[in-house]
Image (cartoon, rainbow, N blue to C red; front, side, top):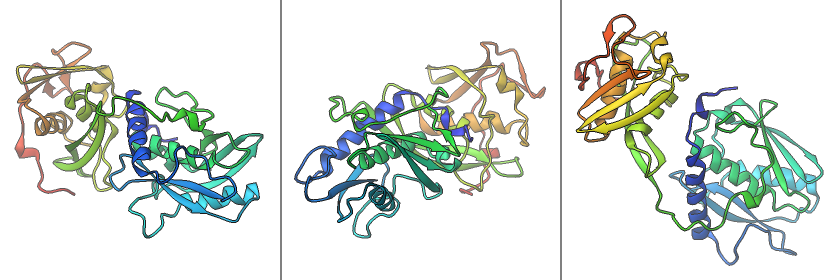
Length: 318
């Protein structure tokens, strides 16, 4: 299973739930909640808005009453957005739906391993869309998501388990606790000799510094297939702070184990140039387990304050 997407603060779950709530409140028509209208066979199918920040509910009417046929029909609707609806699928178009199994009041949904490659905020929105859509069916109280025949895991590598509509709260007062930030991140290409920018929108808690968001995004690696990572995703950021325009980063010892096929300075300036794009930071200090008297790859001393290096930037986006 691809674990690249699991390194995300648990607060992100709350962030998406907040946005989920805001989206649901804004898109409802003549009723509240997610229960279908009894006697009318009208269900709400949940998609994402174009900016992938909230869910969009769309009424769908059907004559189908058989439970198995209804499961298949609603899943088919989830996988195809109506042409007249300004929305997108909650599932990434790279994810393949493989089928379902029902046991008592639990619906098990199976997807390929690409499910875990979705960004965390999108996956949680997808989780909500699947749950809120499918639990409207009579006799289905919970869903359980599997990827590649394995249960979906959370950020702590624990099974997410059964999900119900009530897991996605309908009222949170502090809807301004989260914001969307546009990042410019520097990754490399197959040659590993230059840095190339990748623009990305991320959702984060306003109490989380932009500097931390940047480093975590770099550890996740590029979204573009034309770019390559500069940092080992197993590296852990122990702490980060900013003082007098200097950003202080402290990584664990795995930072020194970078064996990616890149030039020695590329990982360092991937961090530095990305950080200096986003904030008032002008210099960066990197330590390993609190120690700055170490040498990266036996060539790059870390006991210095790094500044932006434009010479390593290889032009426009790949």
